Image (cartoon, rainbow, N blue to C red; front, top):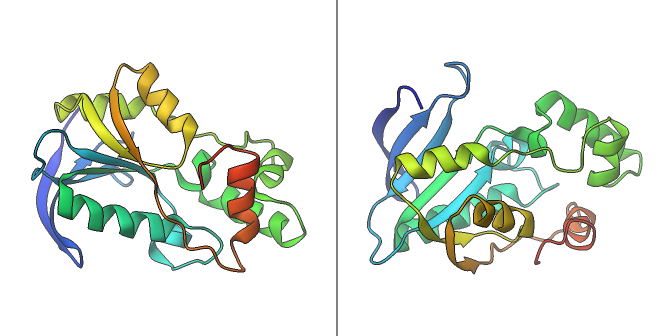
Length: 189
């Protein structure tokens, strides 16, 4: 990987080291929130960008809630959050908003993506290998509910020592979304 930029980032959850990793342009780098205070092996959260959930407080998903949980957990146990710029399960923000509009008409998250000509989940985890290798992390506890993410990491040769479930904030606005993640995508909710 090319140039990394590092700085300290105080947050509501404690202080992290913020590291940027290039993503093809200088405007949208992937970032890592790092807390090196782990005892044996670190805890990792691989979090895909969700502007609506992470920054705008959307109740349509559980992304912001999962990110905040990961920040608290990693602040306490040590590890890293890899914040990947893969908005909308990898389809981008504009396409995600189009998918939201289809959901307003009755589609679920999977059928909306498919109707727009995208896979149900277009995220790519290959960059994770580069980032974790650069951080010298080969074994870790993983915060996730996504079995595809676990499988992808194991196939890359990582030792996933344990899986820590990520809580959701089920509400009337995201109940169908969570049901689809469980029933159609196999998430452990």
